[in-house]
Image (cartoon, rainbow, N blue to C red; front, side, top):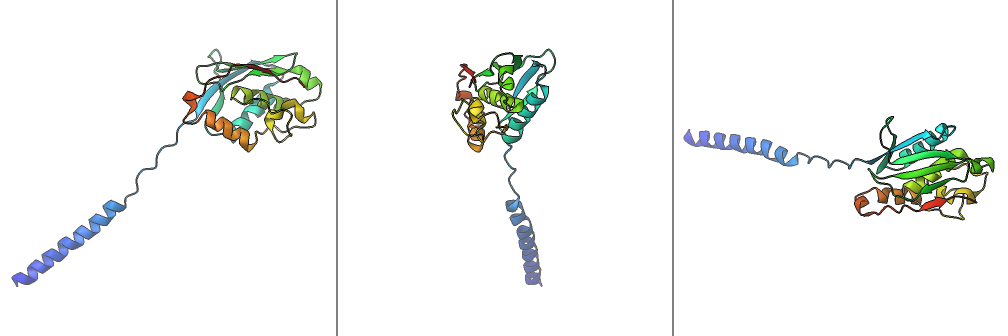
Amino acid sequence: MLRKFRIGVLAGVATVALASGPTALAAPAPAPEAAAPTTLHYDASQAPGWEDAVAAGVEQWNSNVDNVELVPAESGADAEITIVATDGWPQATLGPVQPGGSGTVELGEEAVTEGHDKTRIAAHEIGHNLGLPDTKPGPCTQLMSGASAGTDCKNATPDEAEQSEVEGYYGSAAARTPFDGRVLVDAS
């Protein structure tokens, strides 16, 4: 009788060990959290008549890149990107602008008078603040080809190479990417 009892107790212990052992080992590790995007604030209060174009240009960047997000600055708050309307040609400082930094976008009416698309202009100039130089001459599929794509070009979406370059500026190596600061004038 004693023998039967020991086997039963040992079998019960083995069952408990098997039931708890593999379950504890199979628990999944928590997924690593994705890094939050770099947030850049913009102020377009000095660009009357460009509100829709700026909003559409910002949306193009926000929907096509993950490592940076453009958001309107609160009234009276500092913004990293200042957007103004001018009578001349569009121009912007070359970034990549970082949090706490500053860049300027000038949305020039002269390009609109020649027939260029306002949304494309806004997205293109913001692209300079995000670190992209001009790629002139270039096809309409390249946002940074700017005016060289002609007045029929309405594309305001950065292509995959442009998206990738901006993602790199605001990825893990972003702190090592210097702000360029040159002013790029987009006259044809």
